[in-house]
Amino acid sequence: MNIDEMIKRINELYKKSKEEGLTEEELIEQQELRRRYVDNIKANFRAQLNTIERKSSN
Image 1 (cartoon, rainbow, N blue to C red):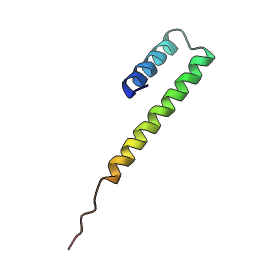
Image 2 (image 1 turned 90 degrees about the vertical axis):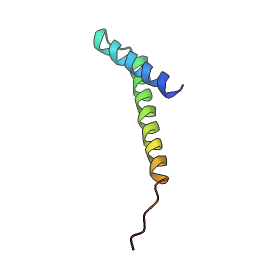
Image 3 (image 1 turned 180 degrees about the vertical axis):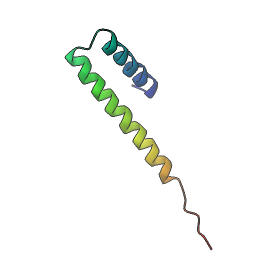
Image 4 (image 1 turned 60 degrees about the vertical axis):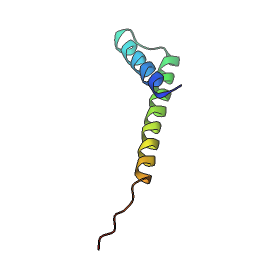
C-alpha cells in the first residue's frame, strides 16, 4: 500500500468512526495504518536529516 492509499484509508476509517462507529477489526486496522504512517514520516525525516552536512565555522 503506497502512502496515498494509506492516507485515503485512514481518512475513510476516521469518517466511518464518526458516522457509525468501527468494528473491532476496523479499529485494529486503523491503529496499524496510523502507526505505519507515523513510522513512514519518521523514517523520511531521519533520511532527510542524514543528508544535511554540517557547515564548518572558521
